[in-house]
Structures are given as structure tokens and as C-alpha cells.
Length: 194
Image (cartoon, rainbow, N blue to C red; front, side, top):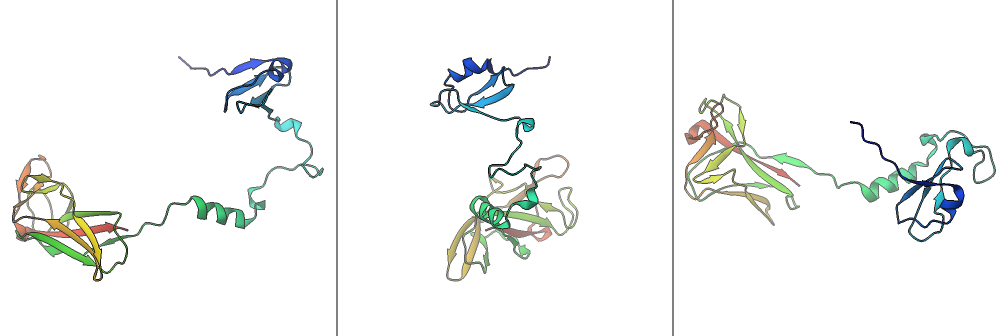
């Protein structure tokens, strides 16, 4: 069944004597217009229909709005104020996997990471994967999808993955079961967003 939204409505006189809630809309059945309310102003603010607008605020004839007529400085200021900061992404080279305390890559970046991930890249077919397949569904010991730690010092951005001398495993490509891997069949790569 179709749903219908019906807003509060009344004659011009009824609307003139009504103070709606902040953000509330009402329909003026006399003028066939919408009124916007601020919770304080009696009668709210009547919005004009397109066919009711005949002159511009400076007394000239109105024309269709052309977005290209907006001064470029307006857009620059708007985007500068509300745009999200630019995020950069960089990747490490492939590194050997080893059962050591930790694996680390140092990026020559002087800003902190917003996010860091480690992925495994298949070098020799194993666990249903082919050479070059990138796998993010892996684990070390009993930890699933371990996230690397990051810190910044004078040598750059360190991305460190705790291994604790435990074995790596991947989710098998077809069955999804945890499958131990042979370290020499895989390499690790770190990816950072900063």
C-alpha cells in the first residue's frame, strides 16, 4: 500500500494565528503555499511558489537560476570549510614472513596513520589461492585478522604486527576453514592510510 505524508493545513487566517514547532511545515489552503515555522514566529514564514516570484530583491526581472553565475570564491570557501581532509594511501614492499616477535615496516612518512592493515600475498599456490592472490582473512596463532600497531618517531611511521613466534594461517579460499600456511609460500605487505 502507498504511504501518504499529509502535513498540518489550514486557511491563511488559521495559519496566521498558528505558531508551529521549530522545523514544522504547514500548508496554507488559501494561498496554496507552504509555511515554515521556527517555534516562535506567529504564522511562520510563507514560501513563494515559482509562479509567484516576478522580481528579484533589487527590483529587476527574475531569471532562471544559473549555477554557473555563482562566484567561484563561494565554492572555494564552501569546500575548504566542509571538505574532508585528503587521505593518502601507501603500501610497503613485500616482506618475508617469519615466526619472530614482530614484523615491521618503516614508512618515510612524517604523519600518523589513520588506519593500518596487513595482507598476505600468495607466492606459491596454497590453501586454494593462486600466485599473486592478496588475502586479508588471515590470522596468527589464535588471533583472527590481527591489526598492526603504528607509531611515529624521527625515522618515520612504524607499522608493527605482533607475531609472538606463532604460526600464520589463512581462511581457505573455497572452504573458509583456518589453514596453516608455509611461510615461504607467502609474503606480507603493510598498507597505511594517512
